[in-house]
Image (tube, rainbow, N blue to C red; front, side, top):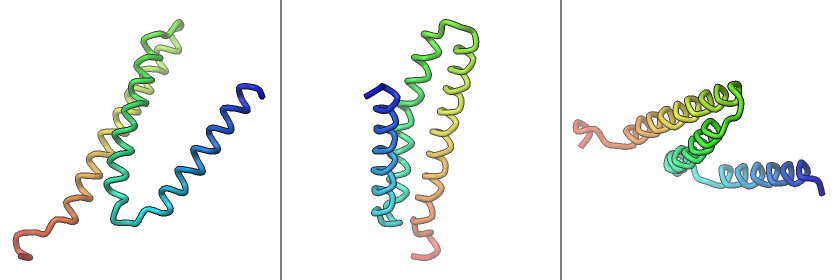
Length: 96
């Protein structure tokens, strides 16, 4: 098999497994799952840093920098949303 076929197979398998995991998780566990996913997004940041550091052209360096900024914004935004959702589950002091 060619390399592109192998990569497409891995992509399809990852998509299927991700869909099945999300579909079977109860809505109560979506917030912790989303938090873990945000933590795993740190891998994208590390990959982007490596790519930007090893860039041989100016365009690759710029794209790597954009990838770092986008992945970092995704992580920070995800944690902010997770924190906001977790506050929704806490009882307020007036309800006790």
